[in-house]
Image (cartoon, rainbow, N blue to C red; front, top):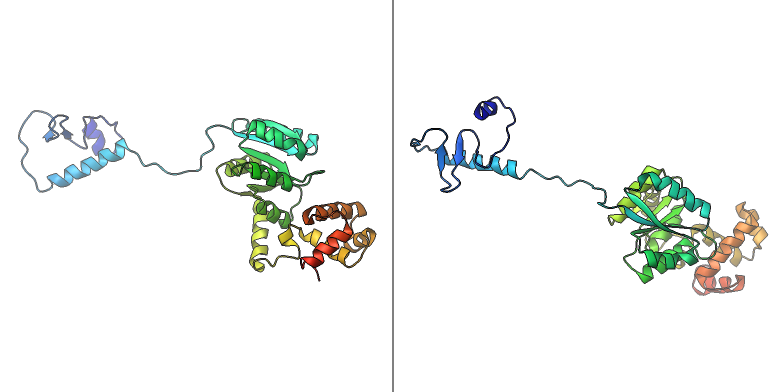
Length: 290
């Protein structure tokens, strides 16, 4: 019945003592013999070929081909959330609750100051951190966490789709840069991607960043880039060097004075100074502006 099925092309079950077609391999002698009543098998020039084909068929049946595919982690990605707004954290937790078999929120911290101790205590697979926070920024937190543990994976989450923030995040060693407009399913996928050792970047931002990098040669991004300044901060610093007041800068850029002050605090921190005079002196001394 098995032989008839094989002739009709029907799939047949594999048995350890069965070979392809009518032949069997003796488990003791390993010799080729015919099924059914015992009788001698005349030598055939095709006998070796048939045996080779038979062995190949058995090999395929015993050891099916395995294809490499992207697999989700066997256990959920353990995640710590960091943001300076608790409401944002709670929203992220609610969004990820439906994916607890893939991503598990094990801790949270409101603000970067609390995050270091939380991360060290819980040792998560990934820290998902806001870029801009009051006090210590997410970029500074990322740098601190990586200094304490170079294997730590920190993915930045931001409302800013400016590729300059992306460049800064990658410069400090972030494992990814995602936008807060991301869908829950895409967020889970990107976190799994980062957990596997890849860099998780919003696809649209990645394309724009590649285009920007292609147009610019190395170390020729914008004045102050090597000091960690964003393009906007570089622009504001140029106005400070030119002697404009906060109101004058705000009018030039059509932004609020408070926004200018926020940028200036970031500039001072990155340049290691405490006021406008120090920023101007550093910019001139280091050749950021002439």
